[in-house]
Image (tube, rainbow, N blue to C red; front, top):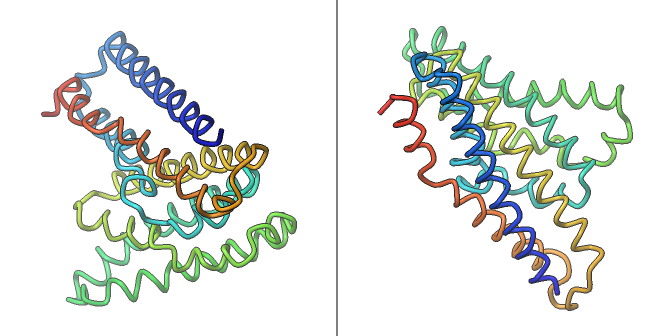
Length: 239
């Protein structure tokens, strides 16, 4: 029964995503926005980071919170928002440090250490804010909140922005869209796990085994977006 449920969710998700891409394509054509190349570059970065190269389901970064804080949609949403905040701020600060401190002084080899220190400071700030504003969410996130410091998703995006040679605005768009992709994956996965919790699952598959199978099916669903970025480049006249 659980396989049927997962397959139904998988097929429904694929239909929804294809419908989304179709609507977006028709909307772009109707507005004739292809002439605005710069705007379309940002749109392409946004769509690619969320769907085509999803940070969790395609690049497999941030798996620890993805599996650990996804039993409830509310908790997954809180973690997604916290990661979005930290990821966006971390990308801005690390970009400025890289361009105005490390590169001019020949200290690029300190990139990883500097970035980790920035991320750790931002996570501490988020932890303090959440403890004051939402104690219940702070308790629900538990140990996974300070673990954002070691979340390879945060560090990975900060480094990828430098490696892709984005400017600051492109880096911010990439960071926000990547964080939204993380948030989307977390919420969908948490919703599936809540549904699975109400179904009869073989004892041997309870817990993490069925969660990993569900994550695999969700990842396969996102694989359906492969090649969409190439099609959008042609559509927008960027190829």
